[in-house]
Length: 568
Image 1 (cartoon, rainbow, N blue to C red):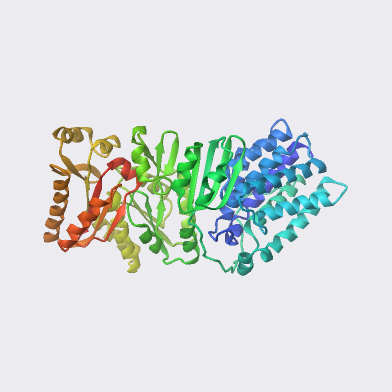
Image 2: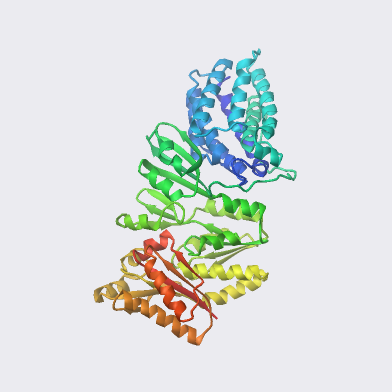
């Protein structure tokens, strides 16, 4: 079998998998029921179609496929698939594929896939890869195509048996989604070898009534593509979670782990090489949205909004995580880097970056599958391009409403919190938008900073204004006016600056009803809790105290704290 036919078969197999994305998502219950196996395999296969090439030899062609799969690999099954291709490509030495070297390549791919997984589980894609190899090995047929057809029938039967092999699959009455994905690839591969055409098209999927388990050992599905020669990545991070997979070659690896501490995972990985790409999915939020959806409308905000995680969880608010670029590596705000590390790397001048257009488009598409309307509350357009990006990509979507909060940090979080209240009250979307517009006018943030250098460096405060206050040597309190940074007042020292905050709130309380008030800190919580005690002793209710995002920490600097409120 010449390389051009093999390459066509691989591309056709990839398309076959992509055409079953929705079905694979619906039957995804293992290792967790987060409903994304189809999407993850879609990404893997799309990368093969987009980035692989037919080269001068079969081995180089297969190597191109393996490298493309590794770049686009997502999730357990996607990364196992990529590692299978890696082993498969290294198991081919001749320039044509025949029954013997197909057997050698499948054996090599099988071993690579099993070795990539820290704790291999039978009844999954790994089992089906083994069944495929065993079927090729145990039967002697006259033709290459006949061998593949026979092996495919064995695979088809083995996929159906996965329902009985894992308790969670049996309870849900489904087959393993990764196993089904491998079967679909083989089906398309054989079609391609026969010259049959497969187009990527929208599938029609019957309703699947599956019972799903919501037992999560860990919350975050965490992945990294890293340039490294480290051979013991499993040993370095294995204790931080489960579902650990390490795939790749001698210079680039993709790591997958379920963990509650993605920031620690990336901190360790960054010390072994250069992180090229990161991905963190909140499996709990995905599960709750799919299986325990509370509302027909959803609130979306960006990670600059500082609001407690338990509130976001309870109300199923979706968060877009902006990134921090530090040197050559990019980290997800509130996910893969802690404030203390950002502050320690201030000499590298970290900068925040926008989410990609693809990320936003995928989010809109994903949410529209489950919700009637989407309400997006963004950080001030004068501080970030997030609003402009979200607004532009929603211009043709009638059910997406993008709002410039003209705030950031804990003030933006309060507006999200207020929007949640309106949603819980059953308020119509038009009324929510009208009320939030008024709340934006009545929201205020006051930030006590120890130094203005971070705010000047990040562009949140003008150089002229900041330089003047720095020369005087007093402690400034910064606010936002019309979405832009401005100095509200000053204190002679830290203690008097805190007193200024209290006096400001007391004055507001005498003139207006305060609907909501919250506090935020960058790294040291001692002052903020003291501030809370003083406010509450004056009869001023504090709704919550929250740690800031890493982007806010980078902009406000060490020791900064903030107070925000919405008045009537």
